[in-house]
Length: 304
Image (cartoon, rainbow, N blue to C red; front, side, top):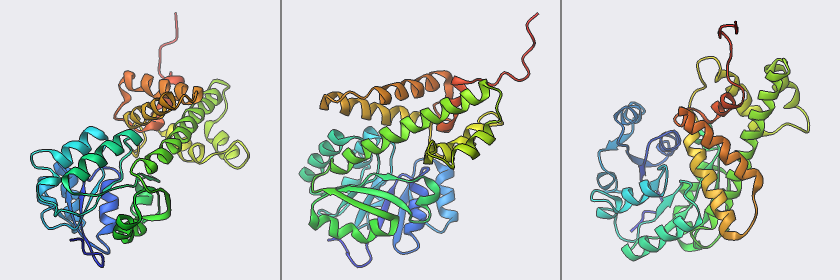
């Protein structure tokens, strides 16, 4: 049975978002983290957190499992694999899904979890690693009132904005899909703007500073713009990978197709991320998409 006063939390996945979330949760709750990548486990342990070598071990004494994995396949393995959550998590304990997997995938996971005796809280997150470490995330939720009440202290500790979309798993993913449509299109638009500035011989830093103050500005232009300039000088710190947006824009266009809603801008943005991935930039920060529109030509020999 879940301890609603001070639940013990197993965070499954200590990646770019999972680790800062786990670190912030550990300021209030007892947290055990699972991560297959040893350096990330070492970072968690250096921050004073207990880590485990399997999801099952992390959940052995947990009241709540929180998934911060990349995609549906990783979620399924973490839950139902041989050393997965379902092997040890006490029956009836909630599973919080913070990953972006799409509405249909969340409903499928929810159905399988209910069959195994666990309620799913569909709670995809947005905001980036820095905000995750401060409890300043946007979280959109699909869950029944009773189970949401059980995990509410956890979500409130992570979020500055918590929006309950509806009572069903998949409802949160639906709103997150729209979020990712806008985020992906805005990144692509920012890349085109900086590529055009470079093509016109303008100082991109000046362009970013000036236009971020006016009607043409957006969060993504102000945030990714400077990182796009870093992509030409050794690469930006990886905060959100290109291949994550390949996945997410695939979810967006897939949802549009099944809903019979044309999404031409999202489809164009998806192609830009796919081109960047095909160019070997999948593991780079998503700001690096600018380099496929406007390659760095410095140092090239002049044509004879």
